[in-house]
Image (cartoon, rainbow, N blue to C red):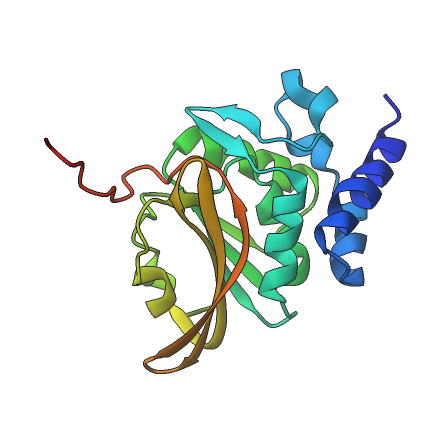
Length: 217
C-alpha cells in the first residue's frame, strides 16, 4: 500500500469534495499520520470513506466527517479545547496541532491509555487525557474555546454549550440512526447561542447518553 498516494487520494477525493477547503485543515490532514491511530488489523482501511471499528461499539469517524469537524471549529493557536470521546486519539491529535491545549476525556481506560501512547509516539504533548464519563461535559476545566463531541447524542443537551466561553464553538451530532444532524453552536453572549446545521451523518451514541422515551402501545 502506497500510504502517501492513499493519503493524497483521501484528501482530494473525499475531503475536498465535502466542502473542506481551508488550507490549514488540508495541510493538517496531510501531516498527521492517520494510519498510526487506526487499529493494526484495520490499517489497510486507514484512508477509506467509512467509520472504522475501535472495539466496545466505538468507531473512528470517516475522514470527511473529522475534516468537517476541524474546519467548522476554526481553532486558533490560543484556544483551550475539550474533546469528549478520545477514541483512537486521531481527532485529539488534529485538535492539538491547532490549539494551545486539549483536554480529552474517554469513559474507557484502555482508550485513554492507547491514545496516550500513540500521541506520545507522535511527540504531541499539549494534551491532557482523562478517564471519565463526559456525557454531561467536563466542567472541572471549563470554560473552553472549543468543544468537540465525537459520539452522537440522541437528544440535544445544553450542558456542552454552557461550558463554552463567549465566542466559543461547539461541534456535536444530535439525533438517531440513520439520520443524525451535525451542529456547530457558537456562544454569542452569556445567554445567547447560534446554531448552524452542517450535514447529516450516523455514528454511535455516547455511553450513557439520554435516549428518547419509547412509546408503549
